Length: 318
Image 1: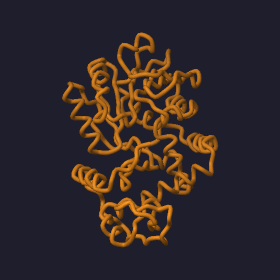
Image 2 (image 1 turned 45 degrees about the vertical axis):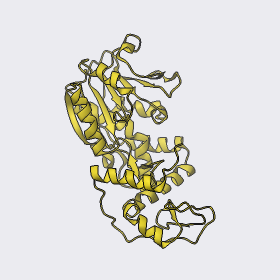
Image 3 (image 1 turned 180 degrees about the horizontal axis):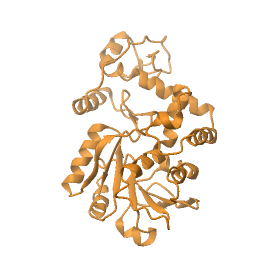
Image 4 (image 1 turned 30 degrees about the vertical axis):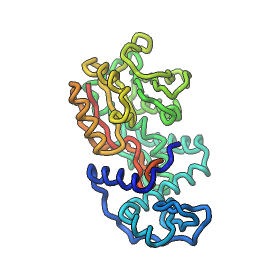
């Protein structure tokens, strides 16, 4: 697990992100600080003991001076950090299988592809449960949303399964149960689906008759073994970060198979779109907000006052 950067480096990262996408202002008065704790460390100077923020329990300061120094960065994200802590507590108290059962029971109230989380989950959930259930379903529901938007580009052959290749798959994709992936068959009556998760961090496995896991980087040459896909999707795959993406994107561009990517942030999605246009990929769906982005945020492991949501933006190309 990466460690937090030193405080000046964190501020430099936050400054860069603020230039790309200004942060909304804080909507509440700053919370106070708890009594000093020997297990807490000041975010700014690293001194212990320190006093934890009562708003989020997620950062601590040696005193009011350093709290005020960090207020520009912390105040806008304090409620989100509180929600992250509440979500983690909710997950600790409830087995994943129980949450999935509750999710599928609610999902089956919706006979067609929903327009957003309100249609899928309904209104009668606690905020933490709503966020956690959305996080379980964000990948299959994002895929269903894309299949609807790309209906003119994804072949609909009911004589065989629609083949979906999930590239850069990692543990979060591996953790989606076959039952959740196969919800697509209920949402698209008469169609069958086959999912192949491909990623360098995964071990080979068959999760069920329609979901298999293949280790490694994704290349078009694998189609001779895996079969030609009808749609390729990469969830939060980070095209701007990893040079290993270049041959994959060149393989997919012009292949005749549509491919989609999701991104954590708007500026990231815009940057990835520039890269894809530069190599000649044709946009089928320009970057846009995803109605099935996870409502449960993930906290940065290197910058204390930063977070993101899975699959916040989506785009599609060929």
